[in-house]
Amino acid sequence: MQSKRQDGATQDEAPLVIVDKVNGALRLMSVDARALALGLTPGLALADARARVPTLAVVALDTVADDACLERIADLCDRWTPLVALDPPHGLMLDISGCAHLFGGEAHMLNDIGRRFAHGGLSLRMAIAGTPDAARALARFGRGGIVPPGGEAQAAGPLPVAALGVAADIAHGLSRAGLKTIAALAERPTTPLAARFGDDLVVRLRRVLGREDIRITPRRAPPACMAERHFAEPIARTSDIEATLTRLLTQISDLLQKRGEGGRYFEASFFRTDGQVTRIAVETGRPVRDPKVVLRLYRERLEALDDPLDPGFGFDLIRFCVPIAEPLDETQVSLDGRINEEGDVADLIDRLVARFGRDRVQRFIARETHDPQRTASAVPATYEPGKANALNWPAPEPHEPPLRPLQLFDPPQSIETTAEVPDGPPLRFRWRRSLHEVVLAEGPERIAPEWWRRESGTPTRDYYRVEDSNGRRFWLFRAGLYGRETDKPHWYLHGLFA
Image 1 (spheres, rainbow, N blue to C red):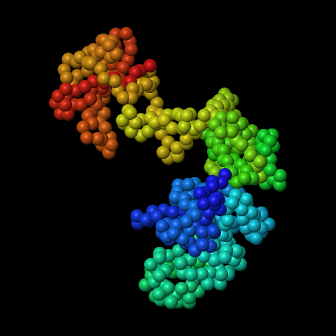
Image 2: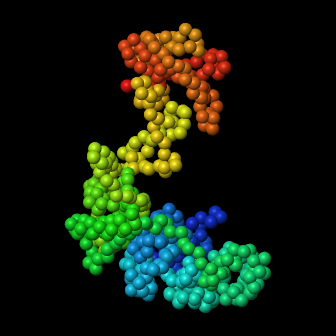
Image 3: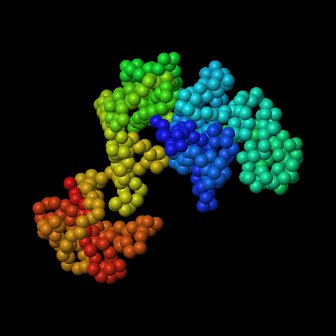
């Protein structure tokens, strides 16, 4: 859509600039090619730019939208390599070691990247070099292209010292000293440079010259194993997509079996021809590598999606990866069939998680604490704590009633209580307008708050297990020690025994 200006020029035909407030004044942060051709450069005041070009199209800087756009571009770059790192504010760094031959070589890979982004209206400045710093310098301050192995020093030599990524005052100081290019800087001894401008300058210089390498930190951790399928003609039919997933899952299963592992987290990535990338993940409560089991979970997940998988004009790449894998030994079915029962329960949990989400299917785990309100916590049903941190629920004493009720009130409910002495067990109590006569009472069990969590004014609790005349059992506590923490202790009902 085009908007018509009063002077007859359309919005799309006008030079475009992006502005932001700097020291109280609006200044140009970025300009398009038409604005640059008219002499408008970043840093110029907006008032001066309007004086030169009255028909200027102005857009406010939106860093959130810029970051989101960069993330989407990074998702698209996953099709060439799984090792993609953000290089703020406007760059991406791809580690293509061992990947270029899959696309016909480095030159064909660059052409493929440029062609795909050109369809989306984006122009790129790309460079391939032996180190990330050399590639960044050549892309931002040079002509880009492909640097032959060992040719980083020659390619980066004519670049200005600002290509090192140093602070503006250091670049200005180097220029005043006559060191305006990286080649001139490389001819100087490093010791005086480090003494005057800091060790960081020398480190950056070595990396840009290709003498020192540092690996990038990818935004997504490399998966344990991965399989993918490229299509010369994009696919869009559900049957073709499912057949591709089945084939990829079979390859993943073979890889996991050779490694003696099973997957705990599976992720399918669907790359559309228009650049949209959709990722759908499922997780399991135990390591698995059966393709039928994982495919069933994906069917459950796809049916439960709020936004159904839209192939658009088709997917030209489908990738399946296993980010989390754990050792998996072959299991032998016991004679009583317990392993089958446990497996059926685990499969049911996995299907529920796939359909409703991991945060909606939970279970309780034990915590190492004496505070009854913290002894258990709800976690996703597929959560597996480390063996060193795993706690077992305490086994009850044979033929003894439980020490803790299964149901706790949060918060505890206030009750009215009568006792023979202020610090003695209750004789009767009123709860929800009903009076309960106590016939048996056990206690007190004194529980103080955890000292590292204790808040000011938190009282000590004396707990009692009581039984009323109707045989119902309750868990009560008195808040505050009589005569030491309070003169009028309050009583609360904390739980009910089954």
